[in-house]
Length: 124
Image (cartoon, rainbow, N blue to C red):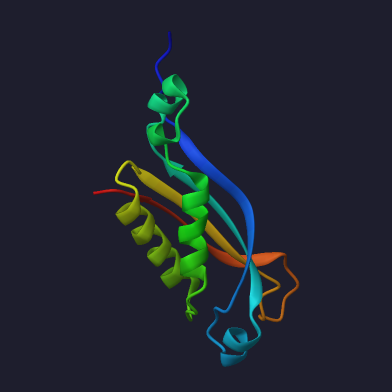
């Protein structure tokens, strides 16, 4: 037997087209965003019973992220906060969320793969 110290549901390199940005053109033209997320939750029950009821569905996580990304915002910080709030509201078993949102090819006069935000939040 073993004891699980921590467990996460992961979605890596989600690519979503959305309309966020400080400049009006960014919210008109849109851009691709890369999202990485880990949700800390105890899925030891799912390890034992092999049922979705013992974990958090990554399809449901994606639906929440997509819905929040579909709401245009000026700042990715605001989008990240909305995503985390929505996840905690929907999934009482979520203990923490580790989220990264990167805008591909941001309009800042530099050549880079992406610029964005990262945050780690825990349920209070």
